[in-house]
Amino acid sequence: MRYGFGIDVGGTTIKLAFLDEKGTMKDKWEIPTRTEEGGKNVLPDIAAAVKAYMAKENLTNEQIIGIGIGVPGPISDEGIVNKCVNLGWDRVELHKELSALTGLNVKGGNDANVAALGECWLGGGQGAANLVMATLGTGVGGGIVVGGRIIAGFHGAGGEIGHFTVNPEEEEACGCGKHGCVEQYCSATGVVRLTRRYLAAHDTPSILRGTDYECKDVFAAAGKGDEAAKAVLEQVFELLGRFLANIACVTDPEVIVLGGGVSKAGQVLLDGVNKYYQKYAFHACRSTRITLATLGNDAGAYGAFKLALDEFGA
Amino acid sequence: MRYGFGIDVGGTTIKLAFLDEKGTMKDKWEIPTRTEEGGKNVLPDIAAAVKAYMAKENLTNEQIIGIGIGVPGPISDEGIVNKCVNLGWDRVELHKELSALTGLNVKGGNDANVAALGECWLGGGQGAANLVMATLGTGVGGGIVVGGRIIAGFHGAGGEIGHFTVNPEEEEACGCGKHGCVEQYCSATGVVRLTRRYLAAHDTPSILRGTDYECKDVFAAAGKGDEAAKAVLEQVFELLGRFLANIACVTDPEVIVLGGGVSKAGQVLLDGVNKYYQKYAFHACRSTRITLATLGNDAGAYGAFKLALDEFGA
Image (cartoon, rainbow over all chains, first blue to last red; front, side):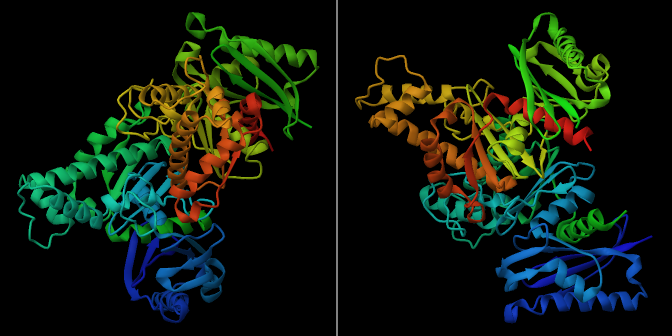
C-alpha cells in the first residue's frame, strides 16, 4: 500500500490529511496559515508538517505517491500561482518549490476545483466522471469535472461560476466589480442581502424583521411558513435553478453537487432548485441528478490527494 | 503517410472528405442523405462512397487510420445514437455498424461538436487546446473543447449552448419548448424575429420596413446607419456578449470562435460582442480572444477526421 498527503490551504488555516491510495483518510490535522511577509512561511510550514509526520510514522519517500494541494486562487497546470491575495503570495512556483522542500511529487489545484474533485471521487458525486459542483458559502465557488479531471481553464478560472451573471439589471456591485453575479444572490450573504431588500420593499409581516438574521434563519423562517422568507427563497431557487440549467447545457454533467453553508438547508434546497432546473434545462439534461455534498470540510483534502494520485499514482 | 475520412452527415447532404494525417484535405465530395425508411440507407450509402473512393485511388485498409463522422444529434462516446430526427434514425450503433460495413475504424461525434474540434485544430482556434465555438446559423449550436478533446457530455448534450436561457421573461416559445433560449435572439432567424418585434414596437423610421429582410439585411442596414437596425443589433451583441462571458466562467477557454451565417457580419459582430463580453466577463477571463470561424462548411469534415485521428492515429 502507498500513501499520500492531501492539503487544503486556506487564508487562516491549512488542513492536512494523510490518506492511503484507496482514499481512506488515516489522519488529519491543521496548522495556522502564516500570511505575513508575502506568505513566505506557508510552504516551509507545510513541508515541516509533512516531514514531521513522516518521521513520526517512519515513512520513507518511496512509500509516498505525492502531495496534492489546493490553493485559494488561480493556478496553472504547471503549478504557477500568479498572485494569491489570501495567502499574501505574489508569484509562486508551487510544484517546484514544495517539491524542493520535501523531496516529494507535488500537484496543485484551485481549492474550489479540488473540492469538486473530492466530491466526485468519494462524495456526493461518487461514481460520476462528469460533475458540476457549486459551493454556496460566504461567496459562490465551483468546480467542473469532465472525464474525472478538473477543468482548470486557460487562465486558471475554470469553474469560477460565482461570477456568472444572472441579473444584468442589478445596480449593486459584486465584490468582483461586476453587477448581477450569482454570488450576490445565492451565497449565504446573498440570501441575507436579498432578504433585507425584500423586507425593505414590502410590508409583508415577517418574524425576521428587527432581528439580526443569518442565511439559516431565513430558511428556518420559511420552514415555519413565513411568507417573506418563502418569497425570498423562491427567488434564490429560481436563480440557482436557471444558473445550473445553463451550466448543464455547456458541459452536460451526470450530477450537480451543492455544497457550502447554504447547502445545509438540505432537501428544501434540492427541491426548490430542482423545480426551476426542470423549467430551464434543455430536455436532454433534465434527468441530471442534483445532490448535496457529503464530504464537508474534508472535500478539499480528498480532492487534493486525488489530484496527486491521478498525476503520480499507478 | 496515412489517411482517413472526415464525414459530416446533414439532413439533406452528406459531406465526405479524404485527408492525410497532417490534416491536408486531398478531396471532398457530397452525396444526398436518404432519410426515408428510418434512414436505413445512410450508413450503407456512406460505406459505398468510401469503398468506391478507395478502389478508385487504389487504397488499402492498412493505409487508412479511420473514419470520423459527425451526426446531427446526441451520440455517446461508444457511438450509440438514440434518435436522430434529421436522419430518420431511431437507435443506431454507429461505430459498430459503419465499421462492419467498411472494415475500417469509426469514431463519431455530434456535428456541432466536431465542427468546434475542426476549428480548434485548423481553423479560428488553431493552436488552442481550450475553445468554445458558437455557431450562429438558422439555430445556435456549439461545441466545447478542453485539452484538445470535445466535451460530449453525459447525455450527449455537451455544448448544446443554443438552449442556454438568456431571457427568462420571454413569452414566445423556442423550438425546444423552453422560453428565452439564446437561439431565439442570436441565430439568423432570431435576429429577424427581434427586428420584427422592434419595428412593431417602435416608430423609428427604418429602410427595413415593408421589405422581406433577412439577417444579413439587418446588418447591412445598421452599416448604413439605420437606427432601428442598430438598436436591434445592440440587443443581439449584449445578449451574445453576456452569454459568452457566462460560458467563459465555466470552462475558461483560450479562444471563443463564432461561426455560422451570422458570423459573416465579420468585424462588426466581433466588436459588438466583445464590448459586452468585456462588461460581463470575470476579470481573469477578459483577455480571452473572440474570433471568427475560418473553415466554413468544411469544419465538420476536418473535425470528424480529427476525432478519428485522436482515437486511432499514432
